[in-house]
Amino acid sequence: MIRLALVLMMLAEPVLAQSVVVVRPIRAGETLSADDLAFGTRTDANGFSDPRDMIGLEARVNLYPGRPILTRDIGLPTVVERNAIVPLIFERGGLKITLEGRALSRAGEGEAVRVMNLSSRSTVTGIATGEGAVVVQ
Image (cartoon, rainbow, N blue to C red):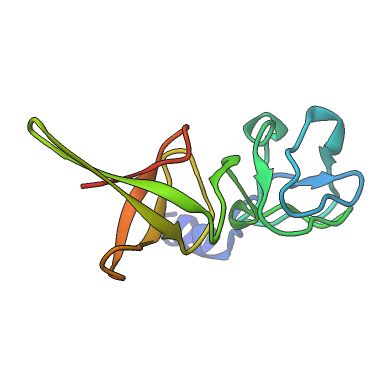
């Protein structure tokens, strides 16, 4: 009996839920709304199974109807654009230093982003804030 259960568990395939797809082409940078999303016929383990998890997020790449949307394809709305000049903030204790930096990639609020310090030309990694600044720890 135990052997039969083990064989059945080994033969069983993982169950995949329907993946969410877009109903119209979405360009990179567009924000997703409920009207843009539907359930597709294809499934993908790296896709979304609940459209509510995606509303208000931004497409990082072009999305096409009928293709499952993968977790790497969307993210938080961009607050720091690539090549933008951003305030680079370092705070520790009562000390606060603010410099200018150039963002080397785009990022949403709370995401890590690499920034080149324009004064020293060194590259640091910080966290993007909702105001478009980057805080370095």
